[in-house]
Image (tube, each protein chain N blue to C red):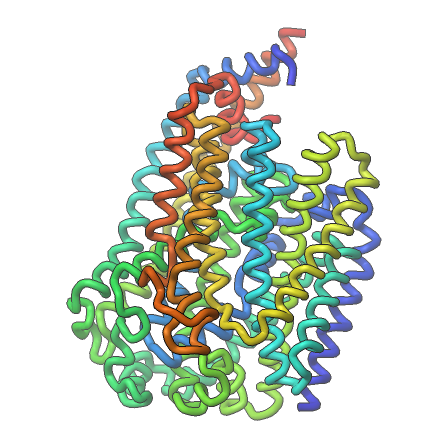
Length: 507
Length: 108
């Protein structure tokens, strides 16, 4: 355990040094929220990848592929193809229309308190759901890796993320994400290479051996081990591919570059890096199933979250285990820092600066509000994570994706692509997507299970879907369209402005 | 945003060059988006409602895995295609901005 502890300290020290230097460059609101908009395409691409590949991807997907074979890989595919949606539909208009937050883009067209308020509410909801899942996972993971108790682990992660964001703003957050991305890619590449070597660098040999390596035998390689129902599989896949383009913590990254072409370049870099990473999840998963074994993985953690660290131990002993654990730690830190920043910017920039102060807040007041909001968001998330220790909250990540796909994506798209779209459509669309997602999850098997301990409450779920996407995404679009048509408001001149600005970057 | 700049946006939006930009974008983005969405959803639909993809493609590797890898290749290719195409969009956007700048000079 000592090597692991040492590497954790190195990461903590390194990130604090970054924060110290970043703090000197974090004086204005623009520096706090967007690192002054001065990142290059490469830097932002790596930071997007670092912001996106959460512990749920690294540990969760490796575990799911190890335990369920092909079905675990669905996540990898959906998480990647989602970037085509970001690249083709969202990144450039967002960069051209927005300033600090996702709500800015919608408010560029509908300068209305209700629209901005609901968009900010969605951002905060998504970021906090996502963060609780990350923090609960972090607590459990550090407990396993270092032997610290759950509360201490959550408090350490919570304190670090607060320090990065409050003192170093977007600059510190970006660099923590870039470094984490490099570490994660390096760690995953080393393990994949060793796994591949063990299969004689032959894909066919690897698949052959996997036919007998697990209790599932040759069905391990076939779809259907985790997702039994077709509708549920489709629902999950819809939320994955359409959700990324509505995740506030990913969207705010596009404001850190100077223009739309650079935003585009950063998506391309991110897509290559993220794609290479998700290809390697096969090696992590197959390797863990073959060299750690199904029983050892399940004994360490029923959801399979320990598959990757255990694989590292089986392949490279204590040092590789310590290294991979440290990478997982860095992964958690980078993602939660991005989440704190996105929730805090919705509070401080959208609610405080625009709705409460009506744009009259001074630069200094904006920065103070942003820092206070960051502390507030961190405290709320830490408290919720401490209460959620015993709950199975892994579904919160999928829920965040489906709220993003149902409540944010329809409105972001219609803002740029539909001339007739109006204020009431935007508000109805966002609220119906949000409420529908939450309602369906509230009656789903994630919350209800007849067997005590399997879910949060004991009872029979009213609906069999574990992911609300297939219902809530169409409801979000429908809400936006009907809300628009039931209101007579239209403003063609404003749409001309949005169309020109979104497509040319003209101010 | 004053009244004259609002109407100048509308003038740009109605200009031939801006319409060219929008129609070129539409002609590229719409069919490509339709293609990647279909390509993506066909995989879970086929694995959920048929066992066709469980047939062997290369020894122990089934068509489901080949299709899954194809999603990665497809994503990277569409990424590169868009980047290449977007350079043409950028060039037109620059022309529009230059013309708008010149028009403003004349107004003064």
